[in-house]
Length: 566
Image (tube, rainbow, N blue to C red; front, side, top):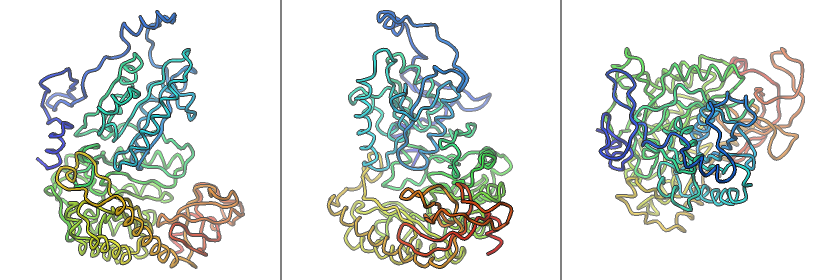
């Protein structure tokens, strides 16, 4: 058994296949003859009970007999749900899955909080600040509940996602505000949980699954007419980095079948989406085991100098195969992926990125620290020297590649010397994009059990400020090297700061701003006109900062034509 599974079971978050709980009512379902039972959560009432109807009658509102759920969008009186997303892109993807499930079960979507019958917050637990934002929002929702007219049904509030998984008991009992709690693997159960909550009871399902990927649910895009979309390809993480809560809130790694991913990407292409980002907590460790003939395939090698806490796994179609297939669907659709682990970059993946014009030349290489000693305490599986060797190999394999990274300031036991090594790594690599945060200890993690959070808050803040200043200085230099070059930009829409300018991103995922003017079409298939969201525009860069490039538009074009001209 992997260390990750032991830790999850010790925390009471995962049951072994075939194990039946000794006490308490439970829901188990067999998927077919000879297959192991699947844990579905503790049994809860199936819906409103007699007390619900007695209370309604006493209030002069007789409860009608239950009706079948209406078809999506067909009934004006359908309950309205308001969805709010916190945290990473995976939560954006989860929100789309949640909405697909609720829409199928007769709910309507509203963007107005005051109209909602149900408010669902899709939450994050990676850092304490993310959780505090949710607690603050709940206080606002308490006031909304209090002033709700008595003639309307009670407002139901739900906490979904990682925070639900981590803090179920506290969420349910703190101020008695939240009606339902559902972990990342329990979204299919939402209609039942909401029915229980409608009867005045609290409802929860936070047990993790060994196989849930929502592969059969096509997410409903939450931004209609958008030019970009996220596609979740795998869930969970087995790396068990000592600082990270993800294995305990999202469970073990499991990948969607490639066929279902390709179906979703084709659907997005048909809808006019021009950029798809493949998502996963450890996206490049993807391993599809759904096809029997590939279950004995040898595992690809790790990046040189990298190791894992688990044994190499044989079999399955790997990330390079998926990336190859996805990139063939639409030559005019850009492909990105996040968040990878540096250990999973075999040469076949790098070669594919270099060869395919629609796979973006941007890699996220989360370093977390520049100190080998701290990396060992974090259980990252590599040294500073191995990481730098990978950076050089990536740049040799993909000329002009844009790099981004994650860094943590003030991890357990980090000394000033360790911190300065991280500063020097930022200078040596010169990233284009960075995500930097002060360390926030999370319960259940290895660091919480075995290490001391001994760097004072003020010192964390000082170190973080120095890292950010260093990153910005080096990113500004890296982006300044693009001045004078022509960059292909996918237009996303008007600039937030000026209606007379457009904003988009180049191949390297750097924001580019340019004037909204009438443009010629490079292929001469269209009359001159202004660029629209979803158009590709060639822009000559005139200036660059640590965050943004500015330029002048040259022409509208296509992804394929731009690649051919270079």
